[in-house]
Length: 98
Ligand SMILES: NC(=O)c1ccc[n+]([C@@H]2O[C@H](COP(=O)([O-])OP(=O)(O)OC[C@H]3O[C@@H](n4cnc5c(N)ncnc54)[C@H](OP(=O)(O)O)[C@@H]3O)[C@@H](O)[C@H]2O)c1
Image 1 (cartoon, rainbow, N blue to C red):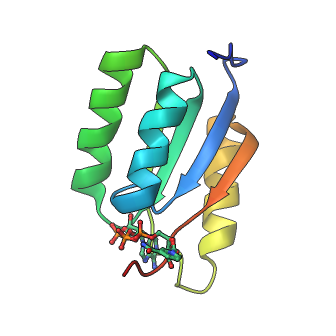
Image 2 (cartoon, protein in one colour; image 1 turned 30 degrees about the vertical axis):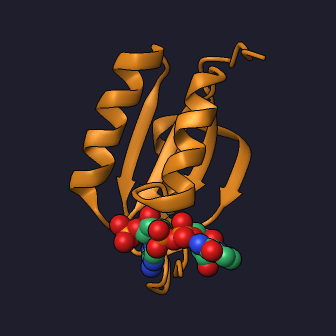
Image 3 (cartoon, helix red, strand yellow; image 1 turned 60 degrees about the vertical axis):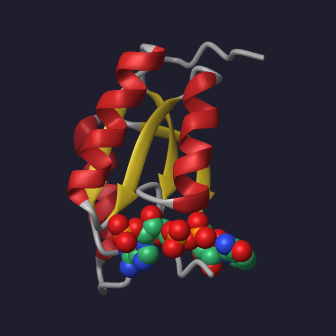
């Protein structure tokens, strides 16, 4: 089912540059969610963002951030606040794959 997101509502996916996070980004974009994608690899996030926006007409923000660095959560919170992004779904996925 396709959802109609409020223009300021975003699903935040951590670890979106690869693996499960990237797969979920595709699924959620297909369902019409705006996305905030976070991982360390800026180039991968930029490519994914462009593709998802072009394919699904959603809003995609990308933030290259190492979530293991002290203060990263605050940086992420501040980014959302400054950009006016209301996070209504969190996919807390970043980590080591197998
Ligand atoms: N695959 C499995 O069988 C399996 C099983 C159980 C649990 N899990 C869990 O599911 C999650 C995803 O697994 P996956 O297989 O999709 O892993 P993956 O392919 O290695 O992807 C991991 C993602 O997390 C990001 N990431 C890693 N460290 C980060 C950091 N310090 N800050 C920000 N982003 C970071 C990576 O991006 P960058 O490198 O660009 O930062 C990447 O996008 C992990 O938490 C894993 O522990 C996986």
